[in-house]
Image (cartoon, rainbow, N blue to C red; front, side):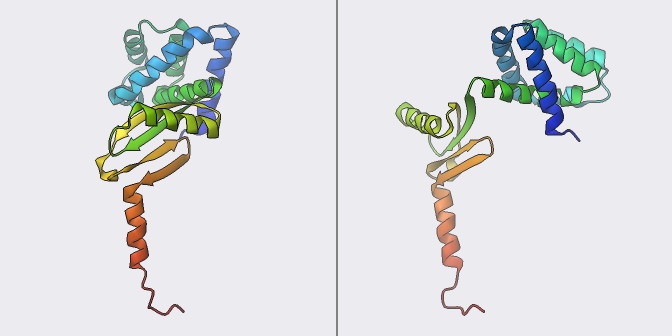
Length: 184
């Protein structure tokens, strides 16, 4: 089992190396690009977690996929794979990305809506999130028609549900309580 401490240790060691080499600005864009690519391609995660595939094949795959990536990122990935930690490489990458966002005072926000929101509403929402958290939100909007109306915001371990579906469920729960039944 992989602990969050282990992932943070790897991510912090990577960033300390990057800062020591004074390459943070160059690494940021590549790291964000790789993180987004890995999220869109779950087969990459399956390959990295597959114990049958030899480490040298995984290293070669990483070099071919991320040919234009910064050499420090590729070296870091090589070390992880050589140390038989390729199975947690996607998790380490996610932790690195999270630390990068923290460093830049940004936060990923998942916005679930029944219909697409207009830019004015999104900007107002981003402003409110910035006021409450002090972080600049990166909003990813996902359409979920089953919400009927309203929205749900998820960021880090916080969730705010302002959907019509939730309100209807609360009403249904209130009606399920029998007011005339004697409680002991």
